[in-house]
Length: 208
Image (cartoon, rainbow, N blue to C red; front, top):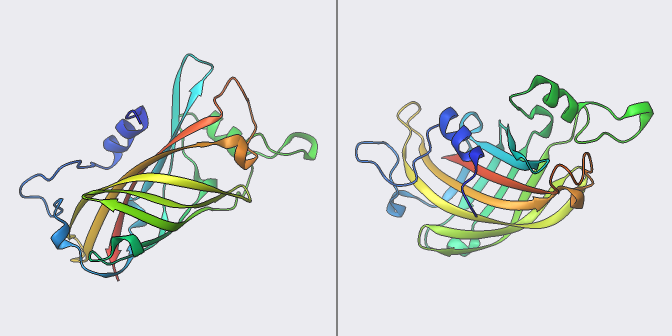
C-alpha cells in the first residue's frame, strides 16, 4: 500500500522511526522484546484514516487515545494477541466543520451520515498472526458502528527499549489496512467520498 499523507501528519505529531537510529532508546532489535503482556501507551498511539474527496484530493483525519493490550512471546510470535479500542467519538480533522459533521446526529431523528454523537469505541481483536522477520500479518475482527468484520493489518516492528521518561520496556509498531466503510453502515456522501478508507496505525505498548 502506498504511504499516504496521513503518515506525514502522524510524523509531524509523533516522530515515527522506520529504521533504527543510533543513540535512540528504541531500536529495531527483536532481542530487546521480552515475553509478557503490554498496555498501549495511549498518549502516543494513533490511527490515521484517509478517503478520496470527490476525486480531487485525499482527505485525512486521526483517532487518538488508542487503548488496549498486546500479549507476546518472541519465541512464539504466532500466538501473539492484540486487543485495542479506538475512541471514534474523539475523531480529529483540520476542519472544525467537518469534525462536527462526522459526529453530529442524523436529521429529523434519522441515522447520522457518519459516526454520530457519542459513538461507541471501535475495537480490533486479533485472531491469528503470521510473522516473518520484522513484519507480520495480523488477522482479526474489527467492530465499528456496531458491526463486526474480518480485517487484516500489515504490521512492522519499529523498535523496542526502555522509555527514558518512565523506564518502562516499550515496543512500537506501525501498520496499515484498507476497509470499506459501507461494510460498517457508514454511508454518508457515497460515492463521491470514497467507500475505501485507508488506515495507518502507529502504536506503542509498555510492559506491565
